[in-house]
Length: 260
Image (cartoon, rainbow, N blue to C red; front, side, top):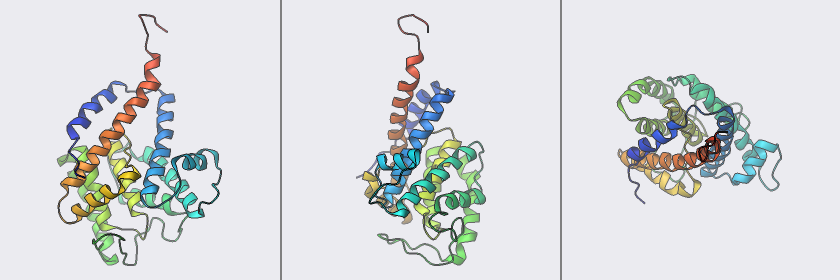
């Protein structure tokens, strides 16, 4: 399935979203929690976590374990939620540092493997279901430093959606950690989007095949399908976000000329 580039659509709907800003504290809190559940569920599900969105919500909001689900699946939900919180600390800066990338991974991965959490891999890895071969461990540190150094120029030379997609793509190609690279890439992509005043973007697990196929093409030198895919995901998430904004904010507006 080919995806059209939606950047023009994204820019148009972004103006509608900006008309609601600044948002009230109650709205901000509700939206943050809504996307905490959505991003944690969808990003984990893409990697094979079997928790449903409702089960993810119960774990994160009520602290209740789900019968029949593995300890690791619970740990992935809790860890991703912690890493998500860090996004809201980091997004106020326009910088993305190597230390911050490591910390995003550490928070997500520390319950699963404390020894390797936030540390670059020292072993070669195989990406299952892919022909792509990540670089050897001895190259990872230098490649990550090169990636981080390139971020300011990438941000300057590309549309924010293109930048976020290419940052995701470049990070995954380095595959710096022993595990959790996909989830860290999606967190990193969302950090880039938040820093440029865009919203948290979800990739539905139902589109996992298309997502991976577009990434595979980018590994072979054609990044356009992946940029188009991410632009479509931003656009679809924006539409849902705008729907939520209207339900949370429009009721405050005076109706029939009567002021509240």
